[in-house]
Image 1: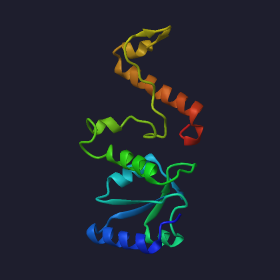
Image 2: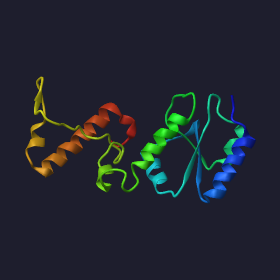
Image 3: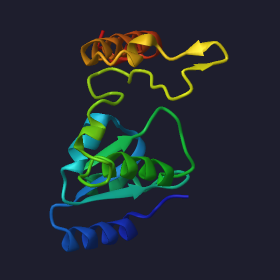
Image 4: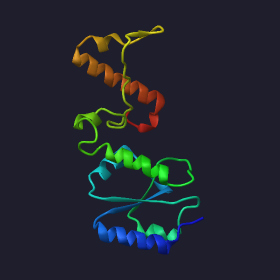
Length: 165
């Protein structure tokens, strides 16, 4: 099953006429791999339009009607709807007022080429596993240093491909 070029062409033309400057994005395994950097860039746009294929996707000629193609990973879904939800969520959370404050998106995985450091809650001890003492110290400089070191260790162990280390 393919989405037809003439049908999508009319839809894209309508969207562009109603939203001049909209960025038309195809969600496809053939696209460039989507990243947090892309989410930041898209969050600055006034309008984006996501085009989702289903099953086999869309007529090849649709590619010429889009501004870019993105893929959310190296796997195949039945359609682009779930990928579109992931893109919408990653972009929306970067927009002012969506999260608690601007600082809410500053120390996260992928922000500095690293995975995020561990987080802890109460109780201080659970089945022999304790909250690291430095986090209870109140020494903000030491806490920041610990967070950076932990982020580096986790990234090196779990995602060395991020290339930060």
